[in-house]
Length: 470
Ligand code: GDP
Image (cartoon, rainbow, N blue to C red; front, side, top):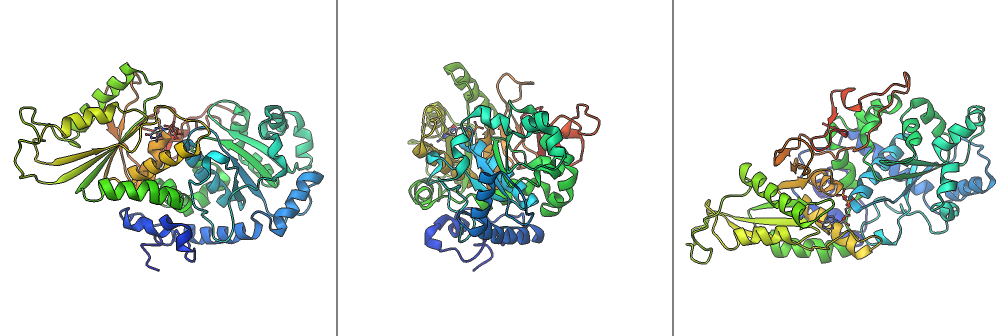
């Protein structure tokens, strides 16, 4: 199979193409990436696939580790170990935290299983051959997942606080909850990033991880992972670009009904595709108008979109156009589409370019627990990633996923009301931002600025407190 089709070795050969049309079909839609995965990453992925197949749901080792859960006694060191990812927040948040959890699994030889929920069914293909990454419905701890008291009692921070003596004396619990979120469980976060606790975590067969953050950059700072993380990704800004394209292939339903149908009808014939991702947090009419103004200021100033000739109409202008451009808008709201189609479909542009303006959906608000809504969101993230140029919204993981999958450095619209008024700023790398990095030095126990420890991790363009890989 051609190397392009296999994404330079990222995609394993041997999948039944019909079961996941996007896996080998993406090459027809997305430009070939100029960023090549390292040979070490490729060999690590192939080894991981074998591990997952050996230890995946209902295999003999899986059944054996379930017995440990029930007996509470961790003995042998040769068994399979797992990280169970639990969903929280919107789709973009979920995808960046799944990718981070997968990197953790790669670095610790654990098997990643997803507690998918019904609202994520039909979004993705299985990424690993001949096995499944879905946590079985009969997984014994499922009935605890929503019990915050139990979760706390069995959390890393909670156990270390209460049971430090026991843990240090070598009694290993069969499972532990770990929460890496923006708020709550700060102790978990601090402790997770400390090497000595990683050694302790390494012994625990089941880690149940709740996170909505892109915590992948932290592995480039934790001493026990740093060397391997750097070897996996010598080009640091490609972490999500590679892992995201490896893990997240749209299901046939999303691919055929939402992505390729929309792309073929609206975007395929344009000379250039300009993606505008407009996420308005706490939206009201005033906020939306501010973002409309900001968007126009940004796209005109940076010459992403041209001025229009308001004295003429498209209908009366001559046919000597220079090129066609498609503007893809993704937003929960219809106002941006209305504004841009009023400009570019009514009046000719001063540059002679002809525009199409498209918006696949405007859902109005973020629907919780709605699979169809998430399918639309995923299709739109993917469509954005097929664009040539991107404008995204600050603080939005929805935009981060699109930019990293597409290998694009977007123009980021500043969050209204935050800092200096500039309409937008170019991202310096395609990586997502880690919004809530650690701020604690494990040895000195002093506060530390995670953005100043190594040259390839710096403050994000769109969030002062966040860090990202460059
Ligand atoms: P973030 O909140 O911007 O970081 O992104 P998330 O994806 O985590 O959460 C926002 C959620 O709101 C998405 O997952 C969608 O459910 C919904 N949403 C936000 N913007 C859009 C959009 O442009 N299109 C669609 N279809 N849904 C959106």
